[in-house]
Image 1 (cartoon, rainbow, N blue to C red):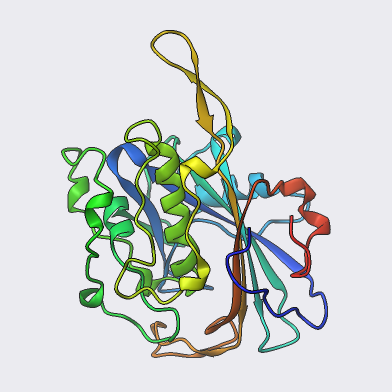
Image 2: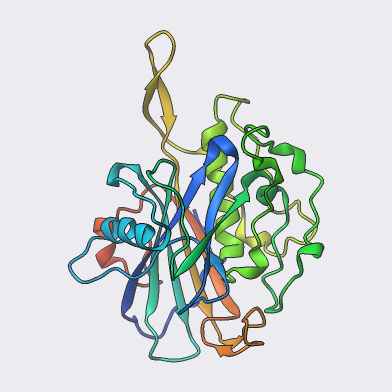
Length: 304
């Protein structure tokens, strides 16, 4: 289901370059792990863990490899949960490919998050992040943490276990220090995951509507589907040995065209980048985004 007007189509179909992005979630402790980029593309920003897919490498294998290289966490393939795809294009030049970024979450792993030459790990409060309005995406300037006030609906999501390892003392996700499009899709994805996890605890789970925040500037983006709106599959057994339904969830596709501009969040004071200043964009929630079938769907004119 589309949540915005149709995005402007590219005059020609550009080549795609595949990447991965993994977001480790510790739902029991109400926290999400992001990395602070120390070098290379995205230096000085927070993001999930990932990188490009190498030749003859599957998307999932690349996601597992990149996560381990950047965080030292070890994940088995069955633990990888595909959540969606980012299609990022710049119309500021005719050379750059469309960045096709496959997004995963993972909730079980081995090892301890460790700083590497590429990234340093930082935990953030999940509930605080969902209760805090994201910065405006209509401008390219930084928004200081002090301006990110908590919305009146903050009580809609409570920490799972505030007594665990000081999780309730963690800060909210610093969206003002992330890639611009992350301020749109990441809060929606996290709300969706929380909704699926809380299903059965309090009815269908309660979500913070992104349009309730005082600084919300994207009413046309809609909001993430609730747990009641997604399909079910067979889940674990209950105390009586009966199988409980498990929410399958939906997948998102976020198409963004960047028009180019000055990145005011950059550590060097703001260099021009073709990957800054969002233009037309579209976010869809769909029932299925099979990685293996994505090959023939690599244009803005085709949707799963």
